[in-house]
Image 1 (cartoon, one colour):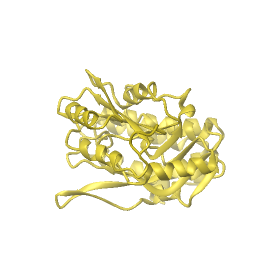
Image 2 (cartoon, one colour; image 1 turned 90 degrees about the horizontal axis):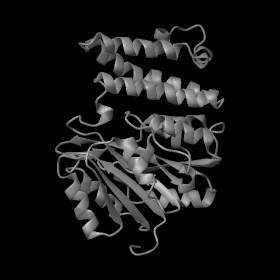
Image 3 (cartoon, helix red, strand yellow; image 1 turned 90 degrees about the vertical axis):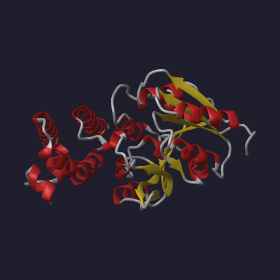
Length: 315
């Protein structure tokens, strides 16, 4: 309840999301588990995000606001927040997304039962439909990663978990972050970190409960909707390969094969559609280089014997 010692710190960065931040803030205040505090990080916004955050802190002292005069990016914002965590558990919420009502309670219940380093939950996208943002269903790769409920597992037990790479789907013991931070000045900063979490944890939990509604902005301004921009593409492809490198270095071959299969099915086809119409040949060249690197992985050969990369895409 409000006023009790908090168990969880939520790090909530946002830039120019004044239209969406009230819903994120309301989703925190509406949690069935009320023993939380939140660090609202205004990352150099030029709209009213800072004012929305300030109003939340004025109304509820569980909110603390941190202002960046200039945009520093999600990685830097989360790292700033991590330096100020004083609770047993820590999680992340992007300020244009929303927690489901029982998210904190469900995460904490799993960690209390298992003693694991972190727990990863399911999530769904929300899209603008008939004038309102409405949530969809759990996608198959998310379900494969999080269902059924598994407590105290490792990546060797559950290699499909590596598909769940978003920071905000997880709650961790704070001590697990003592030697971990996000890369800065790049997009897709959570992918490599997620694979380090899976490979370096003593044990982790996965639960099929939906914890987050992930907003797909109607105006297309989020990073995940900006892959037609060449710098974003470079960061995206580097993150995919970087995550695979972490898994391979840990000897997690089954997880590498699972990631390759998902990338072939979900990532490359839409990128190829963009590349086919992109005015800059450097975009097509970057994607082709990535495809060559993926096809050269030994795990690709074992997963797709006697198949070319193009054949594997059609399979």
